[in-house]
Image (cartoon, rainbow, N blue to C red; front, side, top):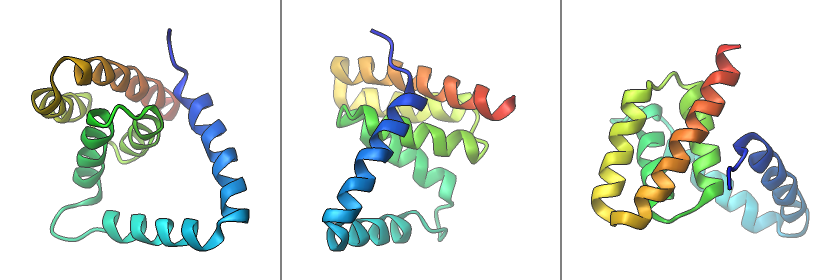
Length: 117
């Protein structure tokens, strides 16, 4: 089965919008935590997105793969940078993580192609 990550992230965004209405405090807090964690500092935002992608792959989270590969494509990450981060995730998580890393390759390619056109 092939996942279309643009469609997946759009669908998840719509579902999260519902939660922002019914669970506004929780979702606002989560959003603020995300902004604080991803803000530039000693580690730049692209490096932080590479970490987030590796963690998302290790956690086997398709939504995480979609959102973080989209961000990496927007931030100008190279395929080599993404693949290297995925290599670390595979090292830490083994075979099952390798399957999600393959999905992340497809997701990054999908978003990078969208940005380049």
